[in-house]
Length: 168
Image 1 (cartoon, rainbow, N blue to C red):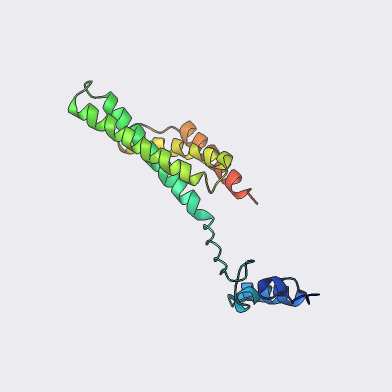
Image 2: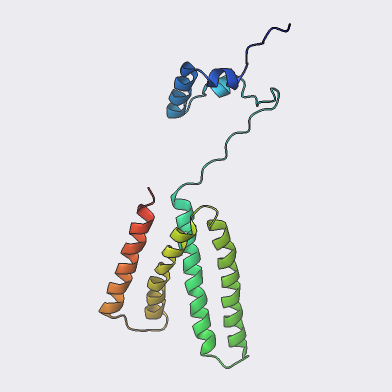
């Protein structure tokens, strides 16, 4: 009859209260935990445990999200400029082509962002393009901004903040 060999490595240490306490202290201080000290081998015994991927900072997807909404709003600028040009003129083709190129960049980055944010949160943030549209209209096309437009934009912005901060 074979004698049962004691478990070695992280499997043995992870099952004890003492090991759990050491890991918690190690996590809080940034020191090596029991798993790292025990040799950090996988279940097969000889394979090293791969370190966990660094978590994406919570604000980073939101930063990229709002950058692509800025890009999306710039495509609207180019579309408006193309609409004011003669059909198939060089200016029309340049503006329209630029708008399409920006939309391709927007679509690619949008798909990447959806890996980190729920679709509902990401899509609700799209309301910020209303604010960008007002800013671009005022700065580039010299359009007027009414009080009703500002109030509407503030309501949208407050709604975005409420949705984003309510993620818990």
